[in-house]
Image (cartoon, rainbow, N blue to C red; front, side, top):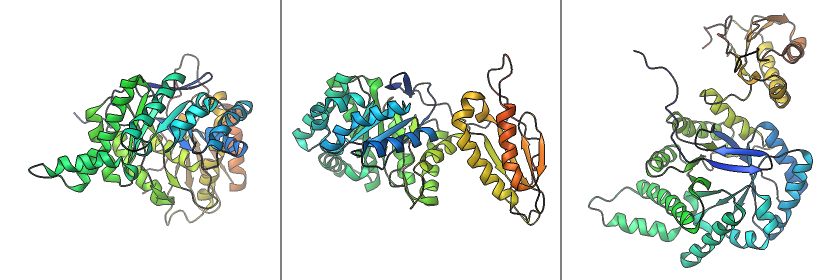
Length: 411
């Protein structure tokens, strides 16, 4: 009997809740894989940061992380949260702390309360006994304000005393591990030991999310495969320093797709180095497209476009595909409410020769043929006005199309 296509069953993890107001974003357990992002604005600029958070949330980011690195940034967080609330943006905010998080959370209680989650890197909270004390202080603040914590280990900032311990243990082995194996073990040990300490201090296991980030694809896969064998915490996936443009997109996709296919991962963030003038929302769209392409979630109607060949010399369908994709993304925040199931729609754009292109709609499978300058606008009227994905009475979801009429000979 042939094996049905699809990812392996999701790994069973504890479920964390990231909350702001009536917006409860669950991570792990039976929740869908979440897409999150991070601002690159100065948090001190509460208005500018609020604008970017709103843009990321509108693009579909379910959680947004901000830097909280100075007293001025911590003092600005409550104003940022208030500004977002006035804008009607209730996306949860995660505070990213380094070196002085214990002090900032203590000295700025309004900041600690306004954040929905804390991110702590155990490699940069201090050294030795000081490290343990400052880590404990941050966990105690999370317990006081009932906030979940992501314990995020990064290969570039590993706790040096822990790394030295792992290296010493490795030197005593009859057959010492290669350096890469030592690094993997140090990452995993740092994450799990920190999580256990957090639980000992009083943080519940279902308020802990772990991440172990590296910048090489194969190393990231190896780390998370091993991490899943040793714990049942919810896991955050991301390839750090993935790079710019197509390089960053390909590297992140290669790493995360393998893990997601194996049922590993509860939330993702695509760390792209911004290109000059590029929208910050791009990292959100890439994360969504990874999940949708793998059949794990639906975010926007799928545009299926002919790649082009000698039989399609016109560029009309190429321009049309781009226009339609942009139009769909712009309309999704409204359409998802007005037309439930619209994100499951398929749209096919094909080249049919000079100056003319065909468009096939799911469900109605209506073909519209006209000059390019009218087609994008006509599609918008059809989709919006007709409610192409409005659910029928008694249906749980919009049915997916069999894609009739879409050419099957496009390489």
